[in-house]
Image (tube, rainbow, N blue to C red):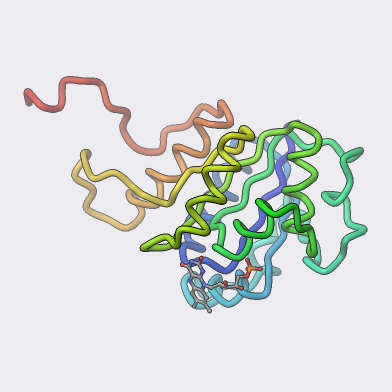
Length: 191
Ligand SMILES: Cc1cc2nc3c(=O)[nH]c(=O)nc-3n(C[C@H](O)[C@H](O)[C@H](O)COP(=O)(O)O)c2cc1C
């Protein structure tokens, strides 16, 4: 069974994380979940749930972000992917600087040192130069920078479709088959 570390940090966009957790479970992935304090604020604000409520489902293990002895903190615990969704500017800056002061940032540094897949889903607008430079640096290290920027070319009519668009791109990066949204087939312009 494939395993992912999913961290929710304090950027807006907690709905993406909730959808991602469900989609990974649907694909039979196991999830080690980390939620930062600011991540929990946004989860409550935007989804009306607590980290404990999100984790209250088989296949999800919730870790205390302060517990640097938890499983995702060690490279010897093998995970197939590490996803930070959404990723705050603070967490972007820390990872790019090699700072691992909590479990969310530590697990990202584990992914880097072990050469494992790390996907960051930043949400900020406009971006500060410091964060753009940090993301460019991490991209050159092989980190997938996957902004929460849904496309509109399929004429979405609901928030769910916009959320699915971004989550679909994350699943694509993980080679997970899914039915979230339509794929571009090249005939749309002529319809
Ligand atoms: C309601 C709320 C919304 C926020 N939205 C964003 C955001 O969209 N992007 C961002 O980078 N930071 C955002 N922040 C700021 C981060 O939460 C803040 O930088 C925090 O230190 C992030 O810490 P963390 O990465 O450990 O979660 C927001 C904060 C709050 C309280």
